[in-house]
Length: 319
Length: 182
Image (cartoon, rainbow over the protein chains, first blue to last red):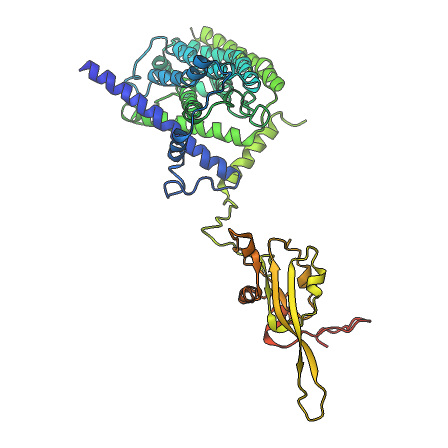
């Protein structure tokens, strides 16, 4: 019986992992198009191109998977998997209701932040393994970006954990109050922006920089391997949006019926944040590499420390 | 001193506003574009007005107009009268593989035999098919829309005047006539 429940929960995670990123991808297609006064996909599937990503998937599956002669074979082959799988693992720990997550972890926030950092190794491996200097440059930029933005991410996460007095994701959601919005507001913004950078989403897409590094670490990837990287990007958006929702926006807490509709509130918050991710992508131009680093060390880290200070003072005062 | 980050917020507002507006995309193959009259689509020939003066062919910058003709003698209509001769059009063709849609031939034609038609779907898989002979050029004439009058009481556009047979009044060179249609 318990085995059946576990399998069911994991299957649910897998289904969510395979569908919600596609939903975000389609939203990006349409929202970006309309923000640029275009229509976006209109043909695939008949109604407003709803099946565009399925068609893309079929196209990717048909393409030849090319591996450069100079590539480091095992690293090159493994990179897409390393980029994609961690997000699936994080999804297991995200609480979707008062009854918890697919698997409740006591050290949930640690687990989540540690695992999403592993996902960044994927592009780094891809950059190294491709045997291409542009890819290597992109890969090293990924590495530099990871170093710079991991710190504010962890600091902002630590601030919420301090406020809640627990490092369990379910515990943080349970301890959440509406006044945490102003109280943890700086941390939320820092966490969200750092997450964007971690995902290499525009305006922090310096490692990919399609116009100068010809897609950086992903230059040599074709076919299904490239599709896995793309899926990883959108899975990353979903996971980080869900993490922001859980940590700073109260996760499954909604206006009513938390026990029954918790998953829906979480999904709405996640999709709203994913929309913001897309919105920022359309609006802002890419940051230069030095601006990127300066932004992280000069602005985000001090802000995260300030948030940590505020949280510390408030917690001591309340105790 | 403006608030830092104001520009960032303004940028977000711009994209959000554009999102709520209708997109400007023309869904061309599904929806035919509504092109104004005299759009540079294809050149139509009104054969009846052509006098084989060759001005169009000579003005054409890339020599894409082919005109062949021969001279015919019309016998005198009255006893003892003089036989008249006239040019008869044998071939009029425009090679759209060479044409650059400058419209100089249409400007140059003194007899209003050439017109712009907004039709543009005449792509061919064979380059030779782009040479439209006089029959094809004459077919385009049916698709020529007259432009709306710019002012009230304006003389009819040449698209109408040429087809209905009444010649638009041409001003004599020299001091310009003050009254239109005088």
